[in-house]
Image (cartoon, rainbow over all chains, first blue to last red; front, side):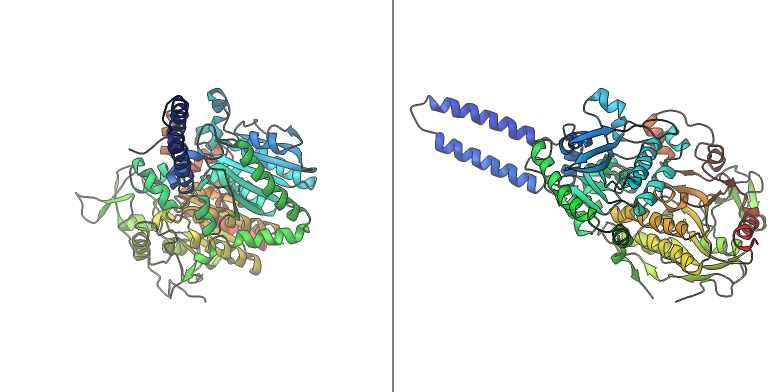
Amino acid sequence: MIRRQFDFEKKYQDFMSKLDQLKDEAQGMDFDLQKELVELEARMSGIREEKYQNLTAWEKVLLSRHPERPGTNDYIEYLCESWVELHGDRQFADDQAIVGGIGIFQGQPVTIVGHRKGKNTRDNVRCNFGMPQPEGYRKVYRLLRQAEKFNRPVITFIDTPGAYPGIGAEERGQAWAISKLLMTLSSLRAPIIAIVIGEGGSGGALALAVGDRLFMLSNAVFSVASPEACASILWKTPEKAEEMAEALKITANDLLNLRIIDGIIAEPIGGANQDFEMTASQIRMTLERELHNLVKQDIDGLLQERRQRLRKLGQHFVQEVK
Amino acid sequence: MFKNPLGKKKYIEINVSREELMHDVAFPGKYTCSACSSSMSEDELLVNNWVCPRCNFHFALTARERILALCEEDSFEEFNGGLSSTNILGFPGYEEKLARGQQETGFNESVITGLAKIGGYKTVLGIMESRFMMASMGVVAGEKICQAAEMAIKEKYPLIMVAASGGARMQEGMVSLMQMTRTSMVIGELHAQGILFISILTNPTTGGVLASFASLADIIIAEPGALIGFAGPRVIQQTIKQQMPERFQRSEFLLEHGMVDMVVERANLKETLGSLLTIHVGGK
């Protein structure tokens, strides 16, 4: 059986609350156990720290999908001094699976777009669990062109299981909407910073992950297709998803080694869902630093660098045989 | 740098391992169409461009057959034929799959690119070989497509891509997904330089190939009955648990929904390309 839930944190919390109870009880005793209990507490937090530093790929998949993991809206709220959400693709609909708009970050006007999964069941359904339809990608396209017009840097947040596999999505050209975004982002005349904050699922995630910089939160994953899907296609059983997660090299560390991402934004021990403030402040620091570097660069030089960066993706793996 | 894999051969190889065709058990030497179950001879299939004479089902062409069907005689000069993939991620069983693909097709990768003359015009032609790991796009396929587009820009030749693919190559993980970005970017540059790009979608063109370069052409042609879509029909079925509309994700369905410019029978493809090239290249 594959593990469907990341339950380490719950076990840890349960243990710690029992330990607190024990400490209380020990106080009324005629013998002194405080030293042992404090040692136990320290040992347990050591175990926790070690656990989080050595999460398996599958544990990161579960953590990246954690229902309490902060999403695009949380970060927008934290980062922006002012924020106005903009709606719709001007063609068909306003896709709730993608949020987009304009705001001010550290005094700098920015355009922000990102996947939105929703906070509770009703929200999840409204946002289609973060799986965009073509309209979502077309909304992003519209906002990108707008950002270009007003010389606004673009920030994207990636957090989706993938583009929605549905009849309507196919009828209205899901593939066309995604390829257009890939082409547009690769030559957009505005600085772009992309951050994978949770689940980076396939082409539907990639559509927002093209730019001058690509970062990942340390527990985020980014995968060519979900480990479950890959396992059922290649190994004929979704039950081997854990093994597949390992084989696909989907963690931030793996992708940094493969030179696909530019850096990792560290999450606190326990993950983003345990300490939002800490995670968000790390994101703010990264954005501050990178935006500062990008906005002062001449746009033609920036585009040249972006081109070289994207053109090289994976190129060092190409070999010539005779 | 240039080699001609076709040499001076002018015959078509019969490839009986073609998946949609089965040996007719009752009549040795005859084949059965898996779409309509009618029986036919090799000769019949050959003169009919590998299209079922009864039900018009378009069987997959090998890259060699496609070259012969589209290009002027001996005009195809392959480039980058020596580029080949390695097991980047150390993915279990990948080397064996690559070796089998190479053995079955005689090519090093799933995309074959070269210079070709079509309808009297010099073009850059790229063809995806579906027998090579479902013509999935890994880093080498991505690189070859990028270089084909760059060649088209440099020489100012039109680019023609015959797509057929299961999508990104899972065995190369995220490195393969990133090929969507690279190929889309280079096609963007081609458009900025005013170079014509024609995309021909054949059965099946799905996933990461459709959602990148294949759908970014000036003109998109589909072969009749081809499966064309972002998500596979099985995935959609599992997600929505409903009956699919008739001919869902087939060429004609996409034409109806405005996603492709035309559906062209294989027999007319060369002529159609000729007219399109004349309007763009030869028009005064």
